[in-house]
Image (cartoon, rainbow, N blue to C red; front, side, top):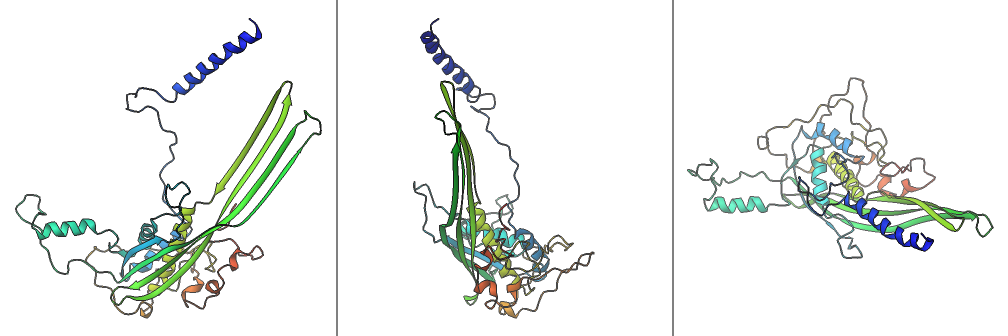
Length: 368
């Protein structure tokens, strides 16, 4: 067979082999399980944690001693940033749900005010005597005045900043033999930084007095690394390249800011002096206080507790700390819990991002 004939014979053979290979991945007919193909992956479900989750759980030892009911309102996205293809917003619209999870980690009592559509509908049905709780249709649900507990405080706010490419740096190197057919290669890398910011306020429900305001920002880093080689081998040439890129999750960054703000508001609200401090937090000055034998928070019946005190949040007597661990470890305190506005970390929030600062680990503890 001539070289031209072999060339024309190889083309259909390559297409046939490719089709057979694809058939092993996708079938035109469903299998016995009703699927055309088996999905890839198999990663297990894990808890969604941030560096502040342990500190929030540490707070449960204090919040169980004096129940205060908190509601979470709208925490909207005010950045106005959308994807270029109009597929959606760049920032999560679920910051309020993250705040609810953060308060729950801290053992704070929550009352639902975010989505009351179901309870409002059932109240309407009960008002028309359409709901029976005994399941036999012989009685209807009673509407009793004062049966719903109210909130003492509520949290509202928004995501206010999303700044791309605060700073970026890149480098690349090309080299190789000077001969026309010599080996040539290139390598390079880039790093870039962006940030997000959030403004939250805690409001006393009875008076609409704003009792606490927090404005925090967090920087997010990304990187790209690539390398390649180009060479001639006889009458053929080869061009191979590899690369790797990573971006710190933006939405996880939002969750970190939310949990840090909830941690600070909760420590002030309960007057515990910030005994629960996160490990890599530049706003704290000590080790993480979690994991040292604190007893779990008590979980009384949902509606069996007495109403929370109604005096100003900073007039509460300090809660008694949980029993110290057997090893005698005394947890450190967060620096900006004693004075809301005089702390240096609030006056100079970018101090901890300087490369010359020994504590410049960032809110997430740096990037490896």
